[in-house]
Image (cartoon, rainbow, N blue to C red; front, side):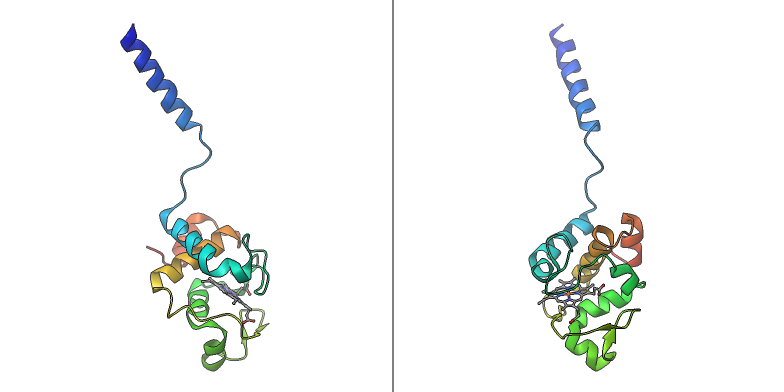
Length: 137
Ligand code: HEC
């Protein structure tokens, strides 16, 4: 009887786990979330709502190709103006020059992770699409 009790307890435990909401976050998106919170939220807001920097709800429209977003984050505003011209994104957005270059601070893999995180969390892309678009992993 005692053994049956243990088996029942284990069964209930696994059943309880199965009802937890959603799968765990993808490790690359989790890493991107950590980088975002540490280096980007100060200007773009804790929920991507914007502040000094623009809100991130239209990030996918701005950069339909994630490679361009990765380049933007790497270069930052000043080097973008030198290399690419006075505006950015498909909408030809104005540049204040405030967005820093993250090439000295982050590896390319970290930039890809944070770009994918922004597209997934704020831009409305699905998890698989965001990861594939930014060629993460
Ligand atoms: C010091 C403030 C600041 C920080 C920190 C910052 N940004 Fe920005 N970001 C800006 C500004 C301002 C712009 C708009 C361009 C400009 O005026 O320079 C921008 C634009 C962007 C855009 C374009 C969004 C759109 O749809 O127009 C993306 C994507 C972005 N930043 C990503 C990041 C990421 C990723 C980080 C962290 C690794 C980061 N930013 C950190 C200020 C900042």
